[in-house]
Length: 293
Image (cartoon, rainbow, N blue to C red):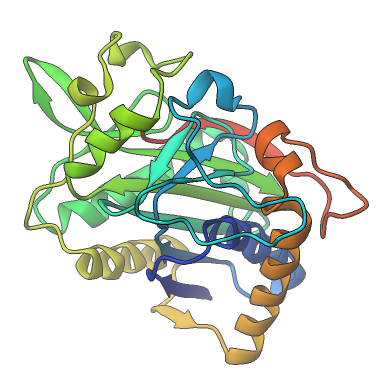
């Protein structure tokens, strides 16, 4: 069985990132008789998202960002100032906000042992994303370890999507983002430094030269339906199911606790410090990847 969660209304960005780990923890708790995997579609307000080992001083070009205070809970990011957050997966620093959409794929490695190989997992799962885009006559292909490119400029490939993954207790989580409107690229240029590490095909191009947006005819709802279709074909199941309300409440409860104890804490956001005493689950294994930016 495959589950689906559509959560596209921008919300607290620290909670939104905690959701991926909460779903991972919940899926692991299902055992071999429950769901094989699932799909989540989601978005954030303006948020600079650090990779697991990224340093804000090296990757962020502005100091005018929001983080939770020492005594106050996380606040919603405003449209004028981005939030600063950190995710569990490896890879570079990225920007979420109006002009992009995020997706997450959750897979039980008990059901898909062939995905233990990092390179093979990227090849198989990014092909699902490409197939979902091809449903709208949008051409794309994998480039580097975990990027998707669409179109060229002066013979050089343009990045439209980046992806990263983490694994925990037999569950693989791949999350990525698609640039849906070119306006976000100006914000990337304003708020993010040139990355300290880059794939060879980037060739030192700046953000505006390197990134592109999906064409105007792209529809998020159509993409989600096609992604579910291709994921279910891979799983050999007839369709994706919405989770019962009781299970959704469990996931939200996990995510709220993770927001309080990890994702909404300044020591995690700024220094990647995660106390096992406060965390809901042990630290995760991260796998390097590169999201847009």
